[in-house]
Length: 180
Image (cartoon, rainbow, N blue to C red; front, side):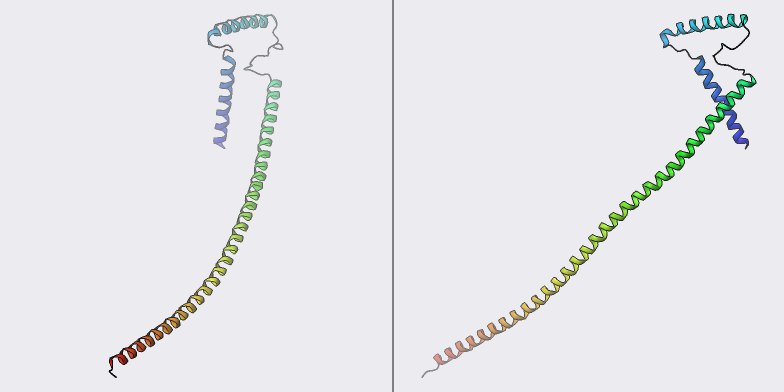
């Protein structure tokens, strides 16, 4: 609570300082500042002369350091309206930002769902392909085993034929070696 009051006083001080700095700042660029100062001097002299003739502040539209009770009440009412409007807009932006975050989260969730659905379809396609490849590989293994068995039989038949041919050759040679 004490921190809030200190903060509020500091805010008021800074607000007053910025207003006074803006009010006292010359409105012409640096080479023409002299003209601005001359204008302010003439204005001050005219206002001072006007105030001495008429003691009423009705024509004064400049910066006022001291306000009457009615002007102070109007100023406080204006500031309260501004603060209420500010907080109302801030609450609306907060609620709209919440709904915006919910909407964005919903969109991201839907995108993730579609992406996961695609990934799931790809996984099933790959699984089906792997099952098909596995069955084809099993079929190829069966065929290679059959080919090996066939080659063994062929080689056995060839070996048998070679042995028969060798035996035949040996018989022929032994028949030729024997004198008749």
